[in-house]
Image 1 (cartoon, protein in one colour):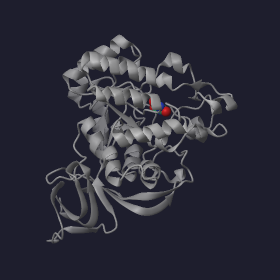
Image 2 (spheres, helix red, strand yellow):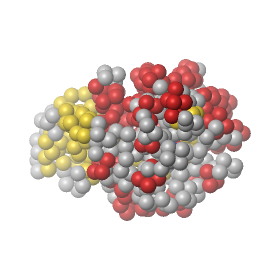
Image 3 (cartoon, rainbow, N blue to C red):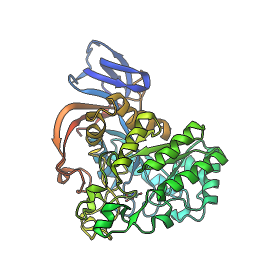
Image 4 (cartoon, rainbow, N blue to C red):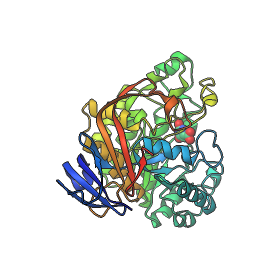
Length: 425
Ligand code: DOR
């Protein structure tokens, strides 16, 4: 593979506490040197003046609907959307049809993503067979096949005994169980956050405690077992506080928040806008503030998109009938820049920590670093570029977004995976 020299970019590499204007030389898919004024010596030059050069973004929580619902998203369209969004790796959730609950299904994801090329796709296997919540999958088989974690996401693992066993078995492999924390009985079929807006609209609400009681239960089970629980898409102040206390007590717990939960509140539902229907639901300003504080103080380890594509015809249904989910791969960076950097809650280095360094560590995959010798997975960002969200132009098949029409700052200019340019393609 030819040599590439990225010149004059502003490097942000939180894993190595490096921040400044440097050239990056890439050889054979690896970072060969990071210095000032590296001579070209025949390398292809990329001028990155005015751009940020950061470790490629890594999404811990992506739904690509293949196999089973290719009308919503395929691995190919999802991978293209992820590359446009600045991601070099996405970890894909197992709620496909069939679910990723056995080796052959995991093999399919890996083979198909290798065939397509571009960014890396890392599978997450199911905790229970058929995601039915009744019987554990074969963890050894799934981890051996290459799963980076296990989750029944979309559903919680409701049965406490089963969750205990799942944490115990996953501990043997030093991998997390990713919990979709939702007490289904307490959520009671709610379609948005339980509060004033749900009442005004006449919609059934789900209280924040439907999430936080399960977070508290699983913290207790992580303490009991010494296993590692990772909470997906936390949405409320109570959950953040439970995790904060658990971390103080040294319990093995990590967690994520989505861009939509840090940028929006239940007010986005407006007049029954299904684009803002998501599970867990968008909550109050107080919750949003608590999530941001959780990111700032390290309680919340990372930001994950929960990219959950659906067709227009499904989302065009009544609010009660429409599916939960927001497609977020292509807006994640700009939305985070707006909600977290422009409002001065986080620095760029902190944001890259949440979108790259920590997700790489949690998933146990390469990336998240610009160290010499590391895989050359890099994202180049123009932090000043202004663009308007137009879902009709998304690479994703999911053409609706609660951010439609928003003007965002911070655009992905270029994405390299193992030194190969995957965006622009
Ligand atoms: O809103 C959501 N959509 N939340 C989930 O947990 C699952 C996801 C989906 O798969 O559509």
